[in-house]
Image (cartoon, rainbow, N blue to C red; front, top):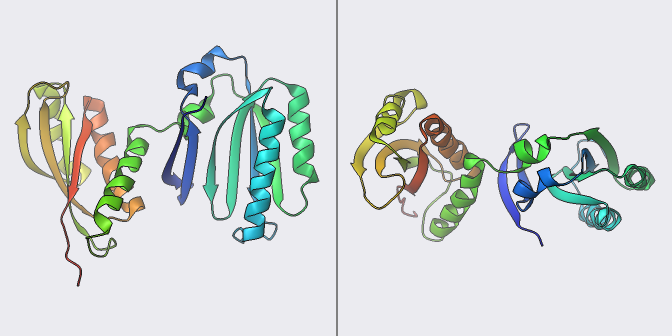
Length: 244
């Protein structure tokens, strides 16, 4: 059984697509897999992007590796870009690590590197691959963009974006409000609503395009700013711009 999530985020200041198997959030610490094995696949030519034939070959290599690790390791996720694919899995089988290394060395049509490191606390999974609230919001951002782009104008146009942040207590909400100017937002209205775990709400206003990387950075700024006060992003909306 798997529980895969795909989301877009920046990695090393570049746009990338992350994939992570969420099922291991609670399961990993119960397993005896202390070695992280990582495989990086790139085009043969330096500074090039994958050709279609290289993409097919990289996919075939991924499947071959998956077959090799099936009974002695767990594949937890990967990161993809136009010129790099990187996969991560955990194992404690030294023989498997040697087999994977041999497969990587045997690949001649792609640039493939393989390495392993002791990682008893699974930092790569929990800190790099598994999404925090800001990264998880990127999935909602992508869905929002998709819902409006069929009727909206140029997504690269800067427009007003409104975020509703929600808090457990009025004191936490007040403390966050004092931080709003430092976060680069202006304050809209505030209210309290019943029958919810986060009843105290405040609206933030700012400006962003609806290109996904821009919107991700915009919402991350608010989410990370509210985090010390136990706040969460409850709602997002952006001004409509007519097509011309």
